[in-house]
Length: 318
Ligand code: GDP
Ligand code: MG
Image (tube, rainbow, N blue to C red; front, side):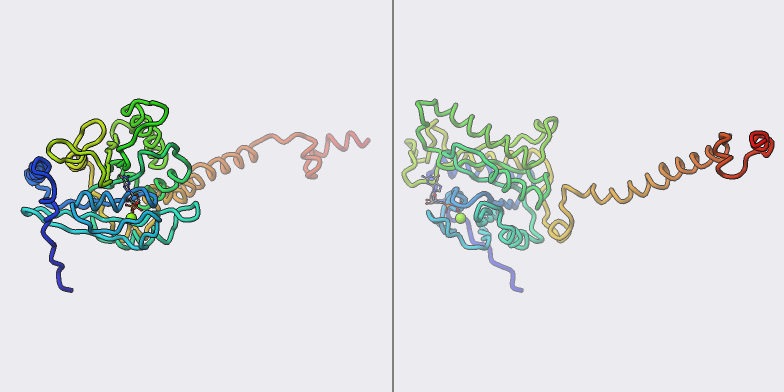
């Protein structure tokens, strides 16, 4: 198979100068740490802004965006290179259909990812959703079951539609932190992150505004209501997650076809049961049998067995 020529990341030149400078700085930092390829997997429910975020990040319209959730069924990998650095971004279709996780869509995504290494997961949702529910938990559980809970050490929660006016006169930062906390709680539940692991698995939350009507600063950079230029902020946070350690996730055959990576220990259950049978149950049975055989049987039992000493019964009979 002919190797695919990776296109130059020209979209970077669409960004205002200060954004370009920051992005080049970040790429330089990654190269210093010997990171020359970054593969970012984008997942979440349908219609939350996954594809829009991919386009914003690449700086080109590379994947199609739809207001009506008619996403194609297949993931798409966009590859771009810049100054010896390769960026791979994998956009995926939403996982929910008819109120449940679509297992077929999940299987297609897993097959697509075969032999790829995921460096970062962007778990995308909307800032302006006010509820977290069982559906969120289902999607997060499906991701955990597919790639193992280790993927959450390499993840960011991305909240789109970040240019909003909070309802009921709430302060913007308060609103963001309440929404983030609610979602992170569900992520921890679905990702099976235990309380004592929380600190280790701190998942950053990043705000994104993909709308063309996004506010800009004097340098023409797209900014959030709190003034942060969000594109360099997103790329910087991705870099921090990559550099803070934790392994990238290699999606191999074993991960896709093997048992749920979080349930590997369950394979030990038959072994533990066999151990218990031979080394606990059997010895107990043996010792009970021994005790019974040594026991002085009561006379009535001996009588029933026809073993009673003749004298006792013969006396009684007289
Ligand atoms: P996906 O299904 O998760 O890939 O979502 P899309 O990227 O296709 O976006 C769904 C709809 O939401 C489209 O109409 C987008 O224009 C819109 N959208 C996505 N992100 C944002 C955002 O940050 N702000 C606003 N206002 N609209 C967005
Ligand atoms: Mg999409």
